[in-house]
Figure 1 (cartoon, rainbow, N blue to C red):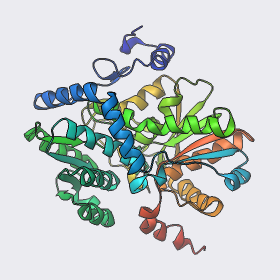
Figure 2 (tube, rainbow, N blue to C red):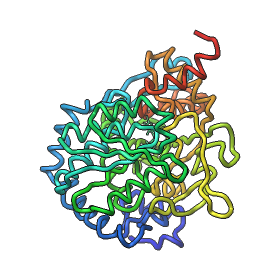
Figure 3 (spheres, protein in one colour):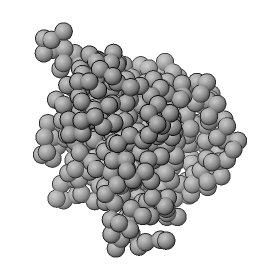
Length: 415
Ligand SMILES: *Cc1c(COP(=O)(O)O)cnc(C)c1O
């Protein structure tokens, strides 16, 4: 069954979603997604799409990827019962520990997978973009492991704000190129990486960091991150004998969330929740909550929701966590919202910081501030569902956030 996207009801979208029909042949997730790029980029994207179709699910590629994930990236990651946090919040909280993956977050699943694909496609160098630096570090590490030269474009403003990650990338052998155009942050860095790719699409591979951008990236990145939910589903069944009542993840571009959600989409009894950065409040420029406050439009080659003003100018965003600070969101999330399969909410800067403290105190785990947005959402859910079980995707560790935590939690004068 194929439904016309423009006229489809939420029920029709949901049925097609559960039947696994997205993305369709044109790279669309219902009305969202697609490929809105200059003509010069089309041949490169078509080559990539053919490469993905040939290799991604082929036995030989899967075996190579699985071996690297296990021996180098630290998979499978643990599933942890948060016993003391559960006692405090009143529901059973389980954590999928992407903070234990190599380089400290889920991003390595994607970077390693795409770097292996690039090598198979005969690429001789990798370009990547980075905002907070986490995807740049994961890309640099994967490229070093596979012996591929790596160039990372990074906004000059972000380079100042995330200096330790610039050093990490350089130690891992990457060339970090400052981008001084546009907003001097992630948005300009993506534009620059695309420009580099289009100038030499045969020898260069563009390693994109989230489930955004033109087709086939949202699909490719989803497939590489879906290992999170596949593992977590089997682990929680083994540990508790049943599926959780709810599943929750934070949403920036949306890759850890899609990765966690994908294996559970057809489990209709499992409530799925996405949490965006509510920042300082609902006004434009004060948050990065695209699904909550955005409107439809095109950014970086895909049709999705984005934070823009009435004239279509993309807006600056704010979040205490640099990794959630993006004015767009993956097109599959726009579909999951439209189909009613996932409920999206927000956590404020203050709620996320309080959740960082709670996880440190109760479980001895310092989470990334991004991941703490999901934890804060889990706390609200727990208070409304006493005794029920919620699975939280803990997307990364918080060591990288120490400068922010020094200025916030630790400046409050508490221990
Ligand atoms: C980058 C990052 C995110 C946000 O990216 P998604 O694509 O939305 O997953 C979330 N958590 C951590 C730890 C990150 O590094």
